[in-house]
Length: 412
Image (cartoon, rainbow, N blue to C red; front, side, top):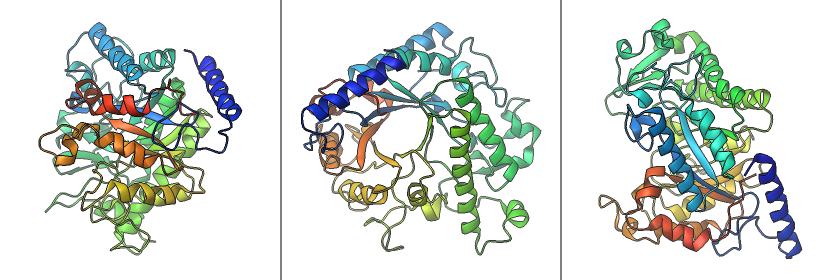
């Protein structure tokens, strides 16, 4: 189904809702958790490529084999009643398209910089739209490598040419967002994908400053000395660096391809109420303090088109209860121009290492039923694609049966 026909379908669906006297209802929701397929409801899945998590199944497959696996994921999303594929196309300062800025990803061929012989992102956009799916280009903004040795990067890698740009931390390499030239470069690299392809959105995950590792320090002393003089604390300076990156990236997406959106999927807790009265009733890591991501501000300032917090906890979790976080985020999004989607931990369903709640096939279905009570929660995204395929306890099948009985209309 092409883009024009998808839009026509969406308008027809909206007209049908109005005709049925449901114009005052939350678009696409009956209020009982069943998604009627109406306009504005997200039914997404993340397709991760880092360390070949979801796709391709291993490095070194032929171009035809990689393409076949990718199309299978797209077809499976349609079968599951989904409407959006969030495709990781820049997992580690690399690219799954012919980028002039960063090398081809090693997760395709096994060798960073080696041309795989086809264009995965270009193919994904075309094939997703042909199936009536949105395609969101998912980029990790700052991770350079899953190791700390710049010598292992391809000779033409930006970090090899600019060794001062990267900081080793926790067994990985990261671009240093405290350097203005780094922020400018990573935006240019990601905007190349937006300029080349009619992606429906550019999507960021939850990695900003790296997650804390005990006993280690993210060494940005030189950058702080050069650029942090006007800030009271290093934490304030780091948050400003990320705020600038988010705000400028949003403007860049809108400038490069009007109509393409910018969305972020952050860690699910902004701050705990024990730290800040504006925070949630949780006792978990705090994105504001620990990775310097002021996610609440991005929503309240309308810097981004959508936010998809990763609420990867079960209902009743003692430290971070799904049933407490959904209403908290709904209140944050209320009255703003930022749409709220909920990130769902499909990967935990049926994992014997997880809590008992995750052994129940109905846990995720209950999440959707609960979230439907909040009009600001405009849909869900499931992590990840290989778990849609495996579905060991039938949790995804239960979600599809309970909530996705009607054909999916794309979120916009």
